[in-house]
Image (cartoon, rainbow over all chains, first blue to last red; front, side, top):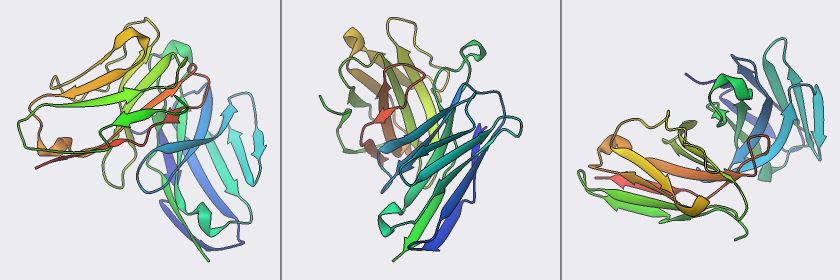
Length: 114
Length: 113
């Protein structure tokens, strides 16, 4: 089963608006990462937030992490048409839980209308 | 190289044939991962290599799937007796360790006809 689940599955906004995507997960984590994917090919790493961090910024991106609720959000401010892509969250379980590779959610498809 | 390189970029094969997919990770990255992604879906973990440790094969869907990593660098994913349900994009990624972001290749789109 998926460790991370994004919400919504699809989001359509106008250029200039903010886009917020949410991710929920089930088990304890070491860190949580967000990736972007264009045209169904390789993913690009956007940002990593560790379990002891609550918020992180990178350019127009803002990520929050609430470990008590096992959830994270990705906010893209002042969106552009070029932000159109699928966005995935991924969790990295602590070293004592077995799985050492990231577990990815099913993604949010963001469409930014020019 | 500067990025993760995968080959071929596209592969069409007949049902029942074997295929080999290649991944050349970023030099110096000790961790290498294989995932597959069906159309419009998330990423499904297949296998993970870390340095000289035994690989984590827990995601391989059947014994028709195998992978190796030679010399701690290039990796090959082999699918024997391909089935139509094997059709997907196979993605390879590498990282410095488990606490860093992954760098993905562009993937191999496998179509089994």
